[in-house]
Amino acid sequence: MRNSVTVAVKRMRDMNRVKFEEHIQMLGDLRHPNVLSPVGYHYRREEKLIVSEFMPRGSLLYVLHGDQRPDRVVLDWPARMRIAVGVVRGMAYLHEKLGIPAMRLVSMDGADFDAIHSCRRGRLTPLAV
Image 1 (spheres, rainbow, N blue to C red):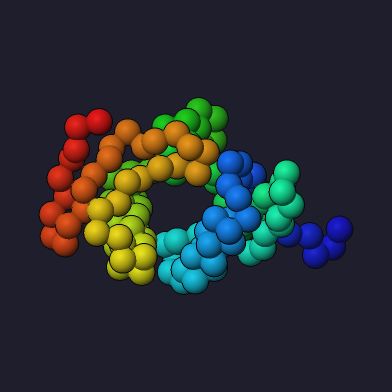
Image 2 (tube, rainbow, N blue to C red):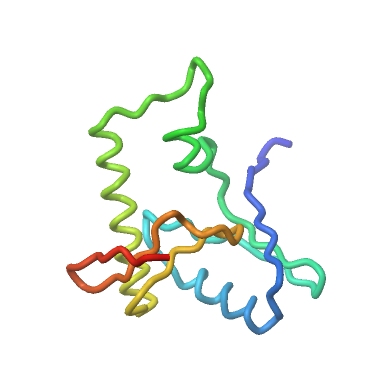
C-alpha cells in the first residue's frame, strides 16, 4: 500500500459499553505531547479495541532494558533525564486534567507497575502494597 499507516491495537477486556465509552471519551479529551492519544476505536460486546499511533521503538521499558540487539540505541544519562522529564510532564498533565487527588498507576494489560504512589501537589509518597 502506498499510504499505509502502522497502528497499535489494544484489546480491552472486562468492560461494559458504558465504561468503555467513558474510557474512550476520557482518552479522546487528552491533548499533550507526552501523552499518546487514540486515533480510533471499535466496540462490540465481545470485542472492544482502541487504536493508537504505533511507536516504532516499542515501549520505554523495552528501550531501557529489553532491547539486546547489537544495533540497539543505548540511551546515555542526559537522554534518560530528558525522557524522565517528559514522563513527569505527561503524568502532571494527566493529574491536572483528570483531577485525581491520588493516582494508582496500572498498566493497560492489567499488571500493576512496581510502584504505587499517593500523589499530592509537591509530594510523592511511596505506599506499601
